[in-house]
Length: 208
Image (cartoon, rainbow, N blue to C red; front, side):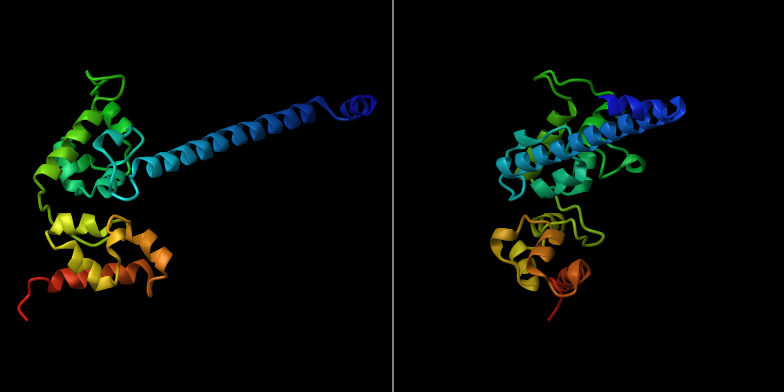
């Protein structure tokens, strides 16, 4: 204790304030990033428990932290279809906006069915409607975040045909291409698999 007092008496008040300030900032950063890491862990755990990573999730698993793109991949529903069903204008579409944020942006309030944002009801209804009556929205370009099932639903091209084009097993049909490429060390990486799938789409239905 005596040594601590001697050390404190040997530094100026300005330096002491600076030291204390840096310690407080450091602790704040630890709490902030620690909290984010914990939330990410809980989300990953939820994804696995609900089957959001293998295409078996119930529509009730949709949560406010999920983005349009996440839902599109998890449920193999085209982004354009989701935007249309959620009434999101073309010039305000951001695939990385969480549903909770969209709910606030459009002032949708809380659901009459429970203590959660009303947009969840809309998203769940959109997924159910698509499953009951799939709509081919088309696809401008194959992207690495898409799954084979997503591409098949968007284009109307059979998933089996697309999987055969890149040598994918049927139990991986709902896995995002970028994850599949990383796991299988696909030659040429994400760009190669995207190009190969685009070529397969272009050849589908063409005259022999």
